[in-house]
Image (cartoon, rainbow, N blue to C red; front, side):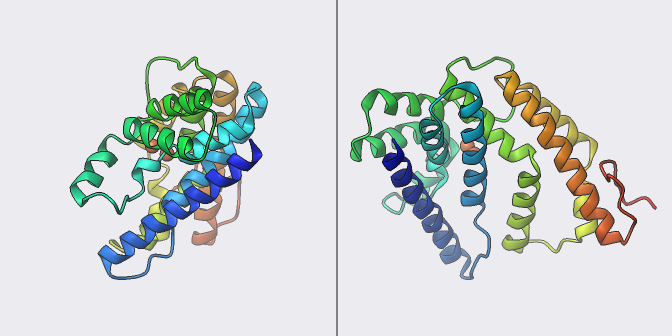
Length: 235
Ligand SMILES: [Fe+2]
Ligand SMILES: [Fe+2]
């Protein structure tokens, strides 16, 4: 399984780089941050630790999570319209694409099917039902942990700085990231996790993210550092 894991990791790193090159070609300028790769890498790390805690093969969980957003990576063999459509339905299409890829490298068919199912059911941020199949539960939770953690905040910042579509004022950005609607969305995401292990992990990651955001805001404003979790622009 370790060999398959390395093969999938290399394959997805290349797909994410290829996706970035495609964006650079469209924009006609270099991009300094690869959101696809960074988000996926963090999700894979969360999948690894969740799998270890839940008694699922960590290599299988990492393989599924490396592949989970494959349909968001540009496919040069398809037209722009076909790429747009697969991106819109990236969970279902991604499950099929991942299964085809795994078949091409000789991955066990019964495990390919599990990976396909896990990817097909990962779309969305919140839900009102539990996923009971362990691998699918882990992929959902790891993907969303990557978004609500401090890493998610940095991924978002990296993405908007690299995209260069807007000028951002770092203090306003960090203050805005603490807004009530976003906190409520994150709590909704947290409540949608499939296992108590993932919910507890989310509580820890969300508290750490709030602290990180507050400390970065305090640093930018030259304020004395507290725990910073309720930091705002107000003096
Ligand atoms: Fe996704
Ligand atoms: Fe994702």
